[in-house]
Image (cartoon, rainbow, N blue to C red; front, side, top):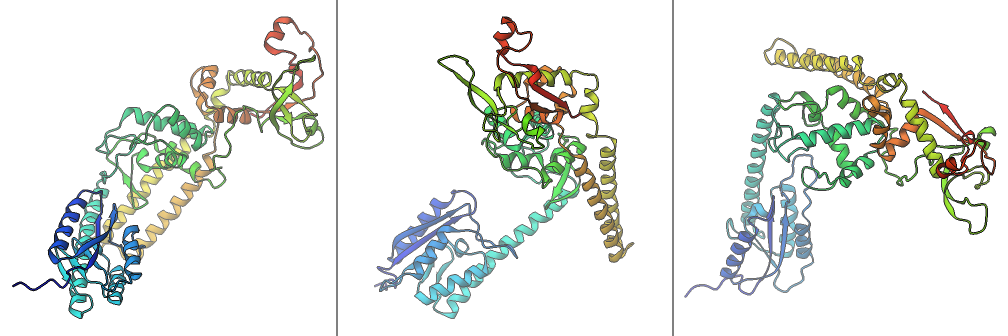
Amino acid sequence: MSNPSPFAGREFLVYLRKSKGRAGIARQRRDCQTHCDRIGGRIVAEFVDTDRTAFVKFGAAPSRRDDYQAMLDTLRNDARPIPLGVIAWHADRLHRDMTECETFVKACVAGNHPVETPRSGSYDLATPTGRKRFRNDVVDATFEVDHMIERIESMKAEAVMEGRWLGGRRPFGYEDDGVTVRPAEAAEIQQMADALLSGSSLNAIARDLNERAVPTSTGKQWSSRSVGRVLSRPRNAGIMEHQGEEVGPAVWPAILDESTWRAVTALLADPGRRTTPGSARRWLLSGIAECGPCEQEGITSRLIVGTAGMSAKGGRSTVPAYQCRAGKGKHVVRNADHLERFVVMHVIERLSRPDVVDLVHGGRVDDTMRARVVEREALRLRDTEAAEMFALGQMTKSALLRVNEKTAERRAELDQADEAQARVTALRPFGNGEPGEVWAGLNLDQKRAVVAELFRVIVLPSTTGRPPGWTPEYGKVWGYFNPEGVKIVDLV
């Protein structure tokens, strides 16, 4: 006659874990249930962590395993006459870190909770032998992952030195191999960079992509953060990056020339750049146009859009109108549609002059920025050469460090020069094409930036009634709008 199981009638918690996805969870559950039935126990609760590792790198915080913590809390609060047991498929499902292992052991010893696994056996943690076996199995599990990471890091280092892709999620702009350019997405990256450098916010760029149903590489919608991450990638300029450092040219083609990419990254890193989306703008001149009476008093007061009655007789209708906040609508009130149309006419006329090329290209990505790109490559080669000389015993460690310090100092100077040159010019899109067509293709953020870069728009008090030279034909388009009531001051 066989001996009864010491666990007959005992209640168990089952813990299941998978580092990637849920594949294998059903198998763990099935094996744990079979094992529990065999020893005469009964599973009363299940705790499952998916896409969670139990391994902890040196110096890193413990991985977040919500269900594991919930299981641990259940054990600590257990008040059953017969303490709960724990079932896991293998000890490595519970732990791959000795610090967490010791916390678990202490909780099990304090509450007299046995640990059962169908793959690595039983652990009586109340005994020194049981604790030793459990710890040894966790050490082996930790070593397994540690050694695997060592092999992977070695392979990555080799790939980095050769400029090869390290693998992972498909990068936007490239095919699944991470090397072949996907033309449609590459064109989007170029357009995103141009928009940023011409005054568009990350929020506006994300909104435009989503409105045109352009998905991210994972099929999701864009956010300002995801736009910023894509634009700041060194891979866009054909540069290999490893652990946050540029390490040299990559094997894949560049989507942006390096000088443009560095202008983008310098702009994104500018602490003075507004990063919060703020409230969405609806009007071209809101917060840009100025009040004339306030200006005469030495005060700068920006106009906002409200509503105003524009009919002189009964049944007054209201229309959107620019008004002075400081003057509570009494300083100036101007029909928003008429004022904006008038300013746009000035924008198109100004950008149709022959000097537009100088306005667009002056101070942008020029020969000095390209020279810095060439110098950065020379600095990379100098560091590589010094490292090779040190490896061959032709240079001392102190000499190698001096070389590295000098090149690092020079790179910092080049970065500062890039940042100083990477000012936003809203006129960038007007380098090619007819100004009216280019203007029509801009979003509101870009249009507002163009106006602010070109002009000061000062709205003066206007007399009531028809302006001089008024005709019925004029009135059909402009109403009683008087052009002499707006002062346009050129800034470029």
